[in-house]
Image (tube, rainbow, N blue to C red; front, side, top):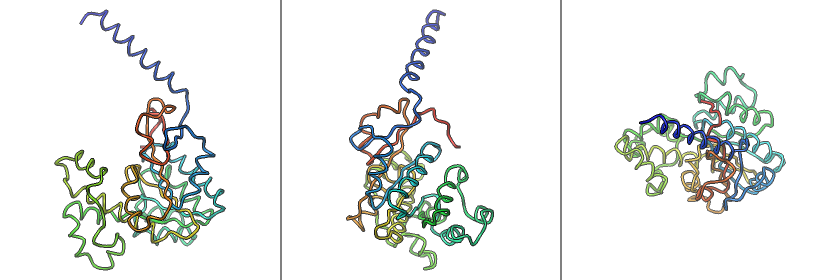
Length: 290
């Protein structure tokens, strides 16, 4: 390869990089509605406030998503005049008592954080939500299935749950688990995993979705907005948790948020808008929390 050709490649790469920088004018995020139209934060909160349940779909390592979730909770608390409750994938159902004891001031921060099975990025990404709930005396629901039960399904399938004692079954969705493994989200996961886990890994994911839906519906209150924080894939395309909720309570008004990353957050890529009620678009080069 001659040196002139190498120089041409380098120059072309520089032009592409400069073009990407030019496209991104420095904004940290842009919000879009389901039609792909830009909206501002004030209108976004107003629309979320009309819902019974908001599923805020995040990218777990994206700081803008976590910051926006906190901003949304604060905005909704004001809009709904305190009629707000929180829930999150990041807490498992058997941790509810511990979470309640902390929120109600019975145990210290040190005690709570040493005993709970907290995600590695809890202190930077989820603690602000918990502390806001504690300060405002808002209910916070631990919705996810304990990971040991998801592990059982991953290894042995749904039938293995039948032999669990009744004291264990209270932490999972009612059996038999009501899911549709033909949903596109599950089929895509199965295709992506290939021979690494097979159908049981999809069933474990479905158990999580069904259990989160179960505890949302078990705890939701009339005239109170339930704000649920979860990975985007649990609510994208109105499947996952959303599908499970709608099987039981189709009359509830549900609003979803999907977080995506692009080189240019100011122009949403085609077909992404239809995956949720609203899309939070952030730059690909945004610093990650882990």
